[in-house]
Amino acid sequence: MCPNCRAFITTSDRVCPYCQARVGPRAIDRRSSAGALGGLIPAAHFTTVLILLINIALYGASAWLSGSFGDMNPRALWVLGAKLGPSIWIDHQYWRLVTAGFLHGGLMHILFNGYALFIIGCQIEELFGTPRYLVIYFAGSVAGFWLSARMNPMLSIGASAGIMGLIGAIVAFGHVSGTQVGRMIRNQYLGLLAINLVWGFLPGMAVDNWAHIGGFLAGLAIAWVCGTPARSTEAKEAMWRALAAGCILVTAWSFWLMYSHFPSPDELRLLFRAGA
View (cartoon, one colour):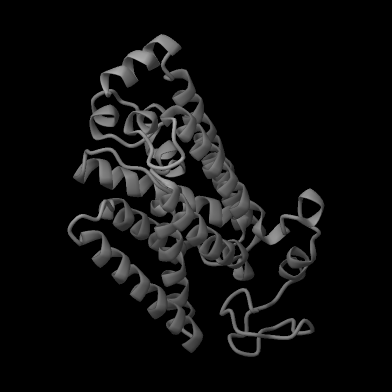
């Protein structure tokens, strides 16, 4: 598929016959790479799978603290870095804006988000390349939980803020491409966004729509500006690699701060006893 308009082309094409974008060897070599773990993880999906594995590992930690693989104990989620307005704005634990995006409140929650992340994340990873993908996902997650913390101080978690950032990126790409295929992609994902928001406003649905809105707007804005690697320069690619490295460092630092604030065994017992 053309990396710019996603139209089907042949492997011998060096210029897309539909949008006239140059198809460089980098896009072709990326798909033919053997990948990691003996090919079990395709190279084109490596970053998406890695994010999924981090989410699964933290779900296991949440389940261990909660004593159940079903619904997670809110105190366990808070200990592991869930978003909570007072903890962020009063205690200045801003790292929660990052760590909250890797936690989930139940089995259905992580299964649904994991499936959506794999389907949409793989598309964005191939279309925008790993550096832009990381920046879009990081910014969508952080912006989503920042807006959520401002508008809804209650505890919330989930990868959906970052996923909505990826959806925003697809919508921006579809609109900016100016092609019929691009418009179809844009309209399809705008419909998905509308269904998601309506569903979140239904009575009894524990959905953080503010996080979804913030994530979508952040992903839309970044993708609107950054474009795809197909029409880029080496200087711009170096900039995106540096930004992606910064996102990784901030994420690692946030998890270190979560670890440094982790309660002692005695404090944990008191915390969970208080919630009994």
